[in-house]
Image 1 (cartoon, one colour):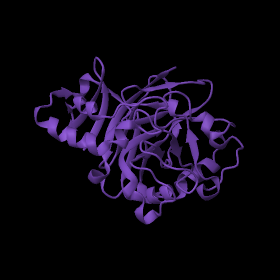
Image 2 (cartoon, rainbow, N blue to C red):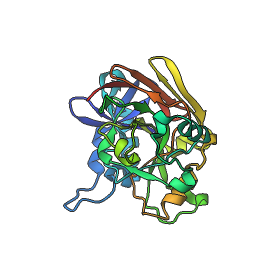
Image 3 (tube, rainbow, N blue to C red):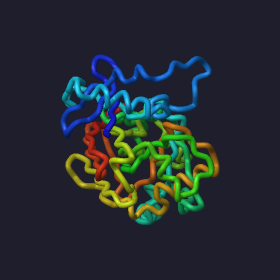
Length: 288
């Protein structure tokens, strides 16, 4: 299933059918439980996905069809408790960062085994249709395509053998980066600097995430092309590692790291990003 959140005279939920339309299953959200303050630290849709999925199957036969071109695609997860990101998780990207002062700015660049993981602000989240609003235009802002995945159930100290059972689904992540000397989490947490989309492709539809092709072009020029088989720490290993430090909750989003080929983007640019078996999206860049 490819589950999309969208805006079309109000927020909606849809199942993507074919490449250019979706089935509007927004009434399935009525099956979500009501919450009172304090709100849970999970994304309600992901935490109740099995209930929502059953309701969706009931609605699909008579659900209205809407062209994708007529809606704004939002991030498929509305309320992640945290966005976890893996730095320099491709060897060739590690090499290019270490070799370019415009990328490392005299920061010490460790391997992921030493650097660990970092967090992006959840307020950085944006959907494919919302675009990227660049800040700090006097500095270099770079694109980074990444396989993203969403945690489907609570995970603590999970072994890599079982880790994929905790994944709800996959999406394309654009980890936009302001270059400079500050900590990663600051430079990567501006509003709209965590693009997630175009939809959530459920784990059963993707299968193994360990050998998927990633491609990113800017204004028609291919910039990044790699396979997730080149990841230093793959999806299961990232879950195993992270879950020894903190509890993972339904709706938590992981960005798995970007391959080589990162480059600057500017207002007016158009980014086309695709990941095999996950989807493809077009994202417009503007000034904040």
